[in-house]
Length: 392
Image: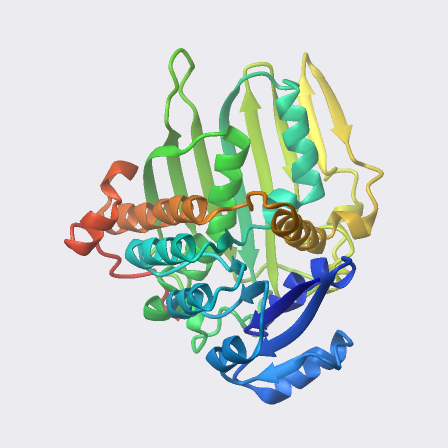
């Protein structure tokens, strides 16, 4: 029986719990949050009357023998909490992204986990989204040939007159550079988008060039170009990752964030429509996009013909929450079978380097090579994130 503890019971915790609820030999035995009322409501919602509540995570680590800990707190807290969990000999740590607010902290977390034989996972769920899994399968089969470029477009906005979403309000830690280390769109949500580009293309970035509007409330609009590392004998490969932000978009809800991917190969092009707002998510139930034939989950253009895929996918399977369940179940399996998580600490750190490079590029208005973004350069102040481009 794997015993699980949660540190932090914010909104995202309701997604992280999904993979544990219907998995045999796994039990949530303890939770920690600063707000006892929040914790009691959380435990009641998920019917966990026997799980114990702690206000202090160190006390939880002392009192409980845990196999897995989910760390779902603001980014600046990850460093101390992950190291304490490692030193407490928790067998597996699932750490929300980004894993820390500096490369030095990321290195220390990785080292502490290795020293204590702890399996470290930096949480990434998008690559477990069923539509993306099918798209990757088609790409690996060579349906559009050798990949040339990928574009990931994140559409964000609020309806005119609507309140700011909870994670974007001026008092949110997510917009504070000291606590978040990055901005809420390009940095926090952007972790997923850089992850997708790297996963689909199967290689790391060589350099990035970024523009982020410095006069808007959030770190968007933003346009980011990247060139992937080249392998011997292959053609150059590129990525473009865009973030739009619309403050008058007519929407059926008060919050909007959705994702669209275009992948070009030497034989054809693939379009992947929606992720965050797809399927039967309650938040977007009034949106007709997922039901429209104009936005099939996957469309491919090859040899002058268009082929669509997954048009019969069930709304609940197309729901973004399925990616969380899949990611968690994968980690549980890795824990039981001594496998590797997706992502390891090293992989999470690599994507964090992308995020840093993007903000440095936007600050300094130049191309930034990933070879510049090292812990040594960070400690010697050869680069420094001075803003997250939020003006709330």
